[in-house]
Image 1 (cartoon, one colour):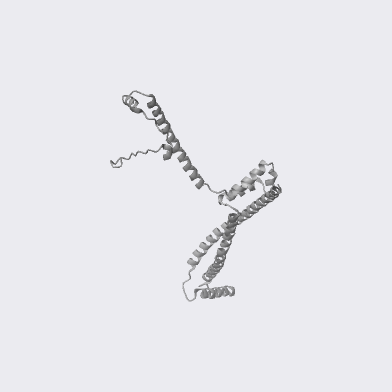
Image 2 (spheres, one colour):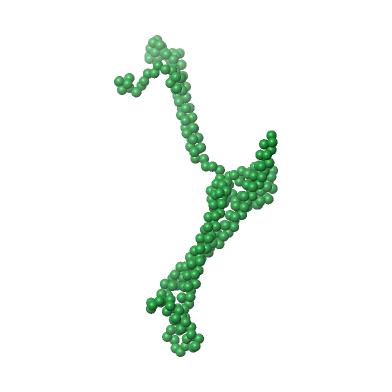
Length: 264
């Protein structure tokens, strides 16, 4: 068959020895073979046909089992480990089933519990290290905003002084006569702007006002974010404290059980 380029092969071993999950057919014999060839059904022919149907069902079943095994492998590979929210929720569920509803009420109300679980889930926090890291990052963002606001505040104060002195200078420039107070204000503004301009003659009033408006808007945005973040940090701190309390209480309740198991 190999020399004749046929794909079929003959193996003298049984299916069991070959490792095939297949039922062997029976030998028809010359007489039965000729009868089957002429369309006459024989007992051995019927038996072989039943065997073939059974083998087909076995192949289909084997294919289904293989698909199921592959699916289970994929599910096992894609299954994510439980998050901290899952662990906390499981603790509360066990306490509730054990009739210890006061357990959660002693730490926070239902609204606080929902906020805690939502916070942990939304931030995909897996463990306490992740919770601490999230809390630290929120504190860090708060400090970054504060650091950004400092130079903006300084620059706004400087620009405000520039614009105020320009207004005074332009108000009294060319006006005559000036009172002693007006003359003093004009002279002070002229001296101030002369130092600021550092040899330049054209006042950049328009540019100063544009920069002042831009920095004012930026300061407003940062302040709004700072206030929102301040509330979020306060809430996150409460959540972090609640989680620590739950885990500590759970650890205390488990400790006597371990000691009791050791005694037995």
